[in-house]
Image (cartoon, rainbow, N blue to C red; front, side, top):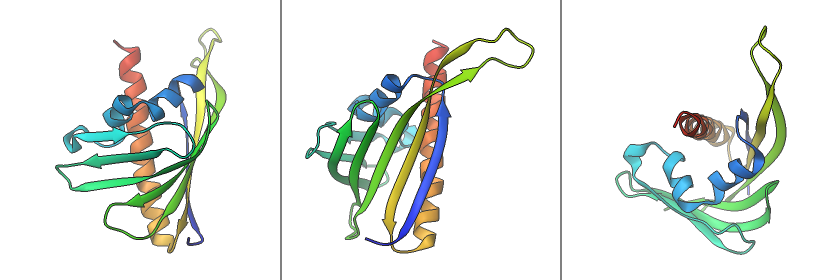
Length: 153
């Protein structure tokens, strides 16, 4: 494994258990991880030693690996290998409780929130790590939209 790391943190307006489910439910993960046009299919079992995968037939893109550690709803660690590539990296996703407050001037009301931190390490180059920062930022932005759309239903 290489020495370069991608790290992305985002605060989401959903509790830890809800955010955890968004990562470990096959259907839910597939609904937000990549754009809808990718027609994403995910396989995941949040049990240490279990295989996971995420694939897109229209883009001929996919990644897979093994769940190394799963501590619901605090942390999941998995290996990551892009289809067609030899290099394996490691992803650690941390789920920490946070409180978000109402807008200034409004009555102070705390709502459930989660600080989600993705640490994707083992890249051979800084450029590869930077590319994955961009990718994870895109993914987590879609996750935020996913939760926002559920709130407005």
